[in-house]
Length: 476
Ligand code: ADP
Ligand code: MG
Ligand code: ZN
Image 1 (cartoon, rainbow, N blue to C red):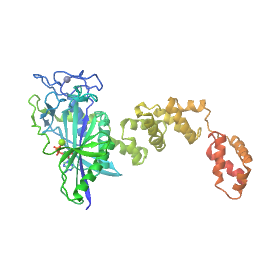
Image 2: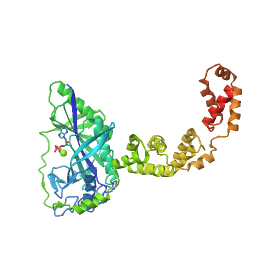
Image 3: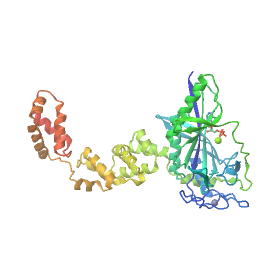
């Protein structure tokens, strides 16, 4: 029997506000433990939380960008449980009345557009962090993260493969970054994901029993864990067994999931409306103001890149996946209006280089203007495409403008017929055997001669001229 996977993701995004969700403490990362705390986020008795307006605005941005319906009235609830990183003994979260519901994102998966429903988006506060001593049975608690604002984005179970889950997640992250509301860093935990997965016989309309996967802190882990889990469930079904509803932990070292807790052991959080916080009322004017402030989003930008620059959808998708990368491309295209050339260089050489250097487009040593100047030098025949690669490497190291590098290193292309002819004559004279063989019909040897000429000119001869002159001399 063939089985189809059914996947739904719960994504937590840490909002980049300056202060926490219910107090004025800083959200800055990396401060000494417990220095960004106050009676409110430490859960002292007798203090009252006050909702940070920026948090609502950021949440509205994401909700509008994902086509959600904004609830004019929503509420905060207390999710009760005990854990040392939770000083109040409850987490403030939205429960029955979240701020936004029923949206969607259209995600590109293997060239097809796939619509994935958003069930809800709600606001909540983060918990603190435990630091376990590796040598002694001691753990320390750091409350700096306590009260940092999060949004949870819950998808419908509309995802049908691990790759699609990865694509959806990348799409959401790209949105969050475009909107300027979240860093979107899975490794550092500012963008986290739990994955729910079940399988069902191909063609079935009902859902199977699902498991929830945790500890997925990279895109690769999300996809690998889902793949493992789908296969595990298939095996159970094929052997006539039953999948148990449970939470499972991904173990990246062993490449497998293991049971963490079953449904029976699941928490009962005893949610109830937080009496310290008023219902949140949002009016149309506020929603409209936020809508007006949204930047051009990845989908729209991608369409524009296809139309305005005549780029293939694939190129447009990569270039618009990041707002800064898209801006870099557009700066380049303004200075050197050959979009496909630019796209090739950005997607190949530049992104490769940034990866090697561990840099991002914002910290790139090669500016958009310099890249445009480099392509222009090639276009005008000042340097060959091959030399351009060398100049590019230099630019990546030194950050110098390409003109300067080309001049200093004497890399200007030889386009003077006579100079090339001289070298060609020398090469022909020094290889009588190859010349004889070529003239007897071994046409392949032309490449050999070209190579010799390029070597003699240290790659600076214009390859087209070299070819022409060689043919003329050898055949004449
Ligand atoms: P819970 O309250 O246990 O977290 P939810 O109804 O909020 O459950 O669903 C959590 C996530 O699980 C959602 O993203 C949803 O799409 C997904 N989901 C629900 N049912 C299934 C299923 N049968 N298979 C896979 N995913 C599912
Ligand atoms: Mg849930
Ligand atoms: Zn505080």
